[in-house]
Length: 388
Ligand SMILES: Cc1cc2nc3c(=O)[nH]c(=O)nc-3n(C[C@H](O)[C@H](O)[C@H](O)COP(=O)(O)OP(=O)(O)OC[C@H]3O[C@@H](n4cnc5c(N)ncnc54)[C@H](O)[C@@H]3O)c2cc1C
Image 1 (spheres, rainbow, N blue to C red):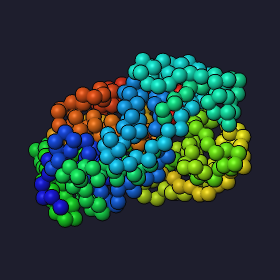
Image 2: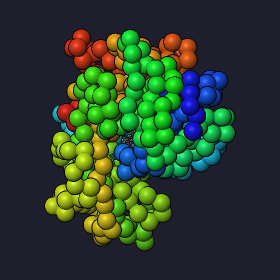
Image 3: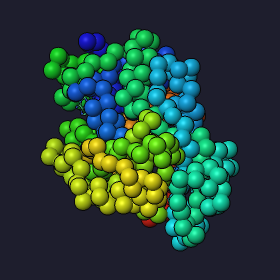
């Protein structure tokens, strides 16, 4: 392992690996990524990995749009595979949320994002298996879909390695050495790695790691559940990805015969002891919602499931910034349920911030560290912040 590096990244999820690759692309190849377990073993490996653009804010909508282009063209844009599958993405909201949906779609269209508001009659042509009520309001994104979070993470890591960066697994960062308000090194079981730049990308563990240098990140881990369902393929060979804001859950196809459903109360949990399985009452409730949305899914069956952690902030949006008070310390944390789809552009913009002093491809200042103290939080057009 390197004894010194220009940049050390703590955490080998999709964010850390995308950043490692993007730093190398900008010429910072003397970089080291430390992962305490194996790549994608945190929130990333448990992700539903839905890629869609329907957000309430231009910064996340445009990052998602630029990112989906990279996922869809990963072999050429990055190298390796992303497992991206274009399914189309349907947003369904209740009538009382109409204004929010119309505002979001108009904002996205101004950013040239491929999306439009559609009617129930349009939906019968696009996705006849999906059932909506007269009062529900709909948007459709033809370019959206899902990807494979493990493939994306490991592809980024392997491309970064090819450019000269180093990835070390099963080797946690034990601490960050700071003297005179400046980063000096990262401590590991194999010794001290000298560096003047450290990026915290340790997902839900970031709060604990930053507390060691006296930084109190406003992060709360909440549990989100995923169930894997076997689809009745004879009647239902395919369906789009759906953000069912009206019923507060989401689902997408998983290969040719399975469907993945994301649901739950998103309750705050303890990082070390939370239930990593699913609650069967929650599964049954979500299966009823699914059968309401796609009647043919009343013949599906439950194959298993898991839970993972959303790392939330007070406004459910990430913090992408330098850490005030400690020169050379950065954080890319607090992605809630959004981090996978944004990861290509998070890596790019954070690399620009570190190498050039500011992010040029997208203005990430709305996601600055100080917004909480300033009371300038990101807003959602809907009641369910996780969805948009
Ligand atoms: C159930 C579920 C469904 C989701 N669905 C979606 C979705 O559909 N679309 C979407 O965009 N997002 C989704 N998300 C969110 C998305 O998966 C996350 O935002 C994203 O994966 C966060 O990536 P990360 O790299 O920040 O964190 P993580 O993947 O958690 O990576 C952090 C890494 O840091 C490592 N680490 C921790 N401490 C240390 C240390 N001291 N030293 C070294 N390494 C350390 C951990 O082992 C871990 O591998 C979902 C999340 C969950 C849990």
